[in-house]
Length: 271
Ligand code: KIV
Image (cartoon, rainbow, N blue to C red; front, side, top):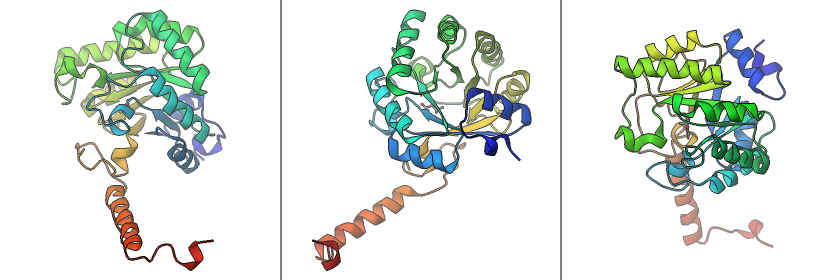
């Protein structure tokens, strides 16, 4: 039997056991109560309240504009919809880069005001002090390396990261620093599969990949991408499990037709 099925509530310790048992970890983003409830009941291990909310919920081009207050709103809705999954919340851009005290204060707001179980933040060496301070305060921290969307203006593009030796070496160093600082896991975004596999073998803590190949200890996708809501986004790493865009369009067109033709509501659908 898998570690997963025996567990009533997923914790960071469960994830560690899954890695040790070779059981892959499943993770998906959610931003509201209703979808969180569906994903939790479906048995997902981790729900990430990603700052991708800035893109898929608010329509911004990047993740930079979303605020701490907005993340707290999304996260508290997700927490109300989940009972078994581990809920992790992204610290948004501008809420932790200043210094470790700022990072801890933002984390405390998230933990107090949402009921979430852990936070995630982007970066390596440059955020180690913040990771130590947050972990020291008793809050589980997940790292995020490779393509880090909050630094998009530094990179200039969303292409695969760490293909060159120098960047790959820095990434390897950063994974070890994050582990030593107390992270319980690390998201690896859009890096070569060979590199992600090497890092995943070397680390004691689990890695969760997105566009980082099958060697990671788990996988994460943005719900709008894997459900086929966001049809413009078609990167190679994405597998879509539903064409919700087409299905919702069809349903709404059907609804419009029924109203226009005076078919809806019928005698049974009124008081
Ligand atoms: O914000 C987000 O959705 C993320 C995932 C892509 C890992 O960080």
